[in-house]
Image (spheres, rainbow, N blue to C red):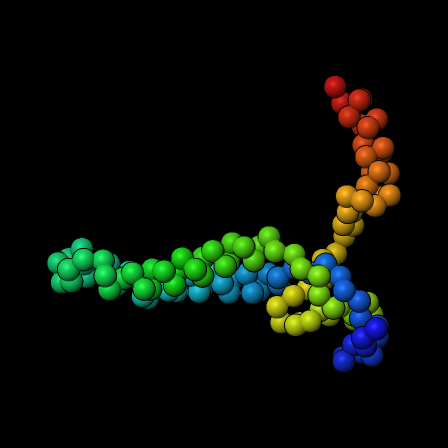
Length: 125
């Protein structure tokens, strides 16, 4: 078992997500690439100063990659070492432990949750 370098507590592998600040930074990077890199080249092409889309293609691809990374970062969940005492995950600047009840399909909690939902569904309709 690993120990936390911050507080010395025991670390276990838990479900983590990407921090919201990292996701916002990726979205900001997408807009910055589009506004500072792609847009001036496209404006030059539309005004007739440049010919074709070729100067904008590499930055357009970079903009698309940053946008897809920002979108995927909202859904990704990984099991990473995290401290139970201080709540930090590895690496701390990128991941944060997921809070709340996460029920896996094979656990007995899933069966209990399904049984509890049955009367509510029957009464609803």
